[in-house]
Amino acid sequence: MSTKETLIKKLKEKNARIAILGLGYVGLPLAVVFGEAGFHVTGVDPDKRKIDSLQKGESYIPDVKTEAVAKLVKSGHLTATDDFSVLKDMDAVSICVPTPLRQTGDPDMSFIISATEELGKYMHKGMVIVLESTTYPGTTREVLLPKLGAEHGLTVGEDWFLAFSPERVDPGREDFTTINTPKVVGGITETCGEVASAWYEGAIKTVHYVSTAEAAEMSKLLENTFRMINIGLVNELAIMCERLGVDVWEVIDAAATKPFGFMKFTPGPGLGGHCIPIDPLYLSWKMKSFNYNARFIELASEINTNMPRYVVSRILDAMNDRGMILKGSKVLVLGAAYKPDIDDVRESPSLDVIGLLQKKGANVEYHDPYIPHIHHEYDGWHMDSVKDMMKSVKEADAVVIITNHKQYDYKAIIESAKFVFDSRNATGKFGKDNEKVVRL
Ligand code: SAJ
Image (cartoon, rainbow, N blue to C red; front, side, top):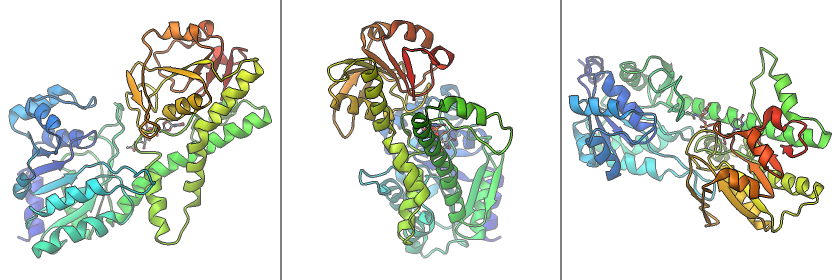
């Protein structure tokens, strides 16, 4: 039997030994899915705290139940280590490491490169490797391929197999999880794609095969660029509607009654999270090497990035209309998380709004039930969430709703506040036509 046939047989019989490199919000759920499918999985991560938790059978990812981890650790289907040398005994390796942006706005490939270089030390014939980290088209072929098989005199597509399969984990989502979200897989060669698909089909319900790694890389960027651009569109619509004296929320709700050919997005104070504001910039960055300017991405990014400043200008105007001066006033910001009902503050526009309000001389406090403490990475300030939210609402000259957590009682907030700026239409019918409330 050929190397390919032998490996596919091991994968189909679940005898193949699996390693997941990077045990974060993508890697740990993937490790559990493969373990529960019957594979023996070794999680590898340099963070000793993660390894210690897993060895005790405990999860540190909200979407992964400790009971599931404990059961797999007990049955031997999941082990965890920070020792990369275990890779020499592995047949299949999935790389799930972060791909952030540098402060310059360029891709930070350091996590992918260090994981690949470590893996390269333990490469052997009969291995399949899949990169899951969101990245620019060409990464798998241009960055991973040269660092892996060549040094060992192995031929990709014959002696070993390399593919890309974008992660589609949406933290906190319960309807679509790792096991039931369709998985796109594309290989460096056709055979690579076949082997990687055979592996993933052993654990994930739907695997969608594409012809190349680049097609798989690009499909992920399309998904998230689609969102970023449409959010930019509705943010610009909010600016236009304000100039026109039209209620943008009413307009969007009306358009959303169209049962086909329309998808509802809503304006807000900016674009947060570790995916949507960042992934599209990997594509526009790559296109610069082809002397192509990805204008949609650049324009949407410019509009989204400017939304915190636009929100503060609207607050300034609204307070001025009420004879209130922002400078020296007490402002309470509700919500620090980048989207409702989660505890993630990465790239959150709330941090920018708070910083801009401070620069205008306002005395700013914030409240977020999920985030007890925040600090602004670049501006360096720190802040604790206020303890008694309603007391702070009463004392504030202005309450600014940035993140529309479900648990807030917006009716009570309006009743107790002097003035409310609502950047998410969180106040809904309580805020509409209420002279105390101004909406984006
Ligand atoms: N946002 C708006 N208006 C909208 C939607 C989002 O202003 O209509 C803002 C949010 O407040 C947030 C940012 O955009 O600040 C991103 O929001 P998001 O809903 O896109 O949430 P994310 O960043 O958690 O995106 C993830 C992505 N999942 C993956 O990449 C695997 C995205 O593809 C999902 O579509 C999204 O979750 C989701 O649908 O929840």
